[in-house]
Image 1 (tube, rainbow, N blue to C red):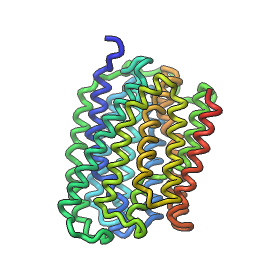
Image 2: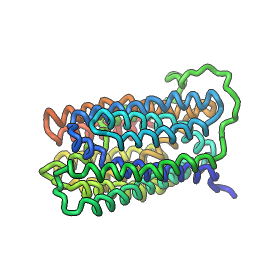
Image 3: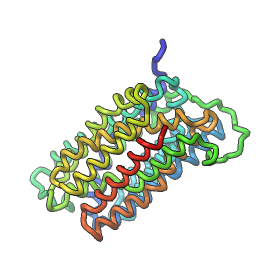
Image 4: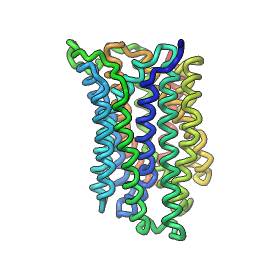
Length: 394
């Protein structure tokens, strides 16, 4: 049947769904868990910057290796398994060093798995279903995230009823219980990927491991990657949004912070698949530029009008739904077939180059100039990237 999606699209989507149930059970409480154990904003920026940068920088190497060996599946499975181990380290944490170790191992696994998995998706889709395939994958991914956040909210509400909102030390046992429960869907995410079909040719490439040299890339891809790098320099971790909501002037409890993150993920889920379909019809460029504009809007709202943080989650969720899957579809469109996984990894690596300074700078700006500063900076960088896409990408 023309236009029918390959079973790999569903299987990789289910693997991401289970993994994101696990990850997003833990993610909304990481900043609060760190603060409860005595860590500050600067430590959060350093941890998130190093962890996310490592994940992204590894993707080009795992993508190049997947192209070199002609296989995607083993690397993808290994990455999901490592992320599961990383989450187990959170349970053992008594201070920021173990949280740092857990985030590094978790993101190391993400760095290994992402480019080979995305190559499996791209190679399981036809040219006219690329956007739809990546959009469906993002929808299942964010559905898992939504379920994980709901589970965490229910656990926080059940076990911490009556606890003072800002007394985070009393939440430590509950945080650890949430982490323990999150390991169950993480293991399921690893197991389901064994059902996928290998899309690589299984033949070692005779080409040198070159990591997609810049001069060989399509000019349109270069412009997009440059815009991505500019945007990423202001794209600090979501943990700063969650921590901002828990500050005294806004005063969200951990359960309320979780609901805020849930709202973001619901909007993200609802927009991912339609954005992929729209990009197949309207073009990737305009969907991506629109997403960057919405990011700028949401960050300016949080920076200038912090009590509108709930409303800011609406454009922020739309931004994520309009960019993540669509960006990968654009890269897959423009990448040479024999280095597709490498170029997908290169895209993620440029994200990683920006992510460390983004979170590090956000923590520094917050400490030096107040909590509004990282959001005003991030919004400005996103606006610049949106204008570059809108007027320079043909």
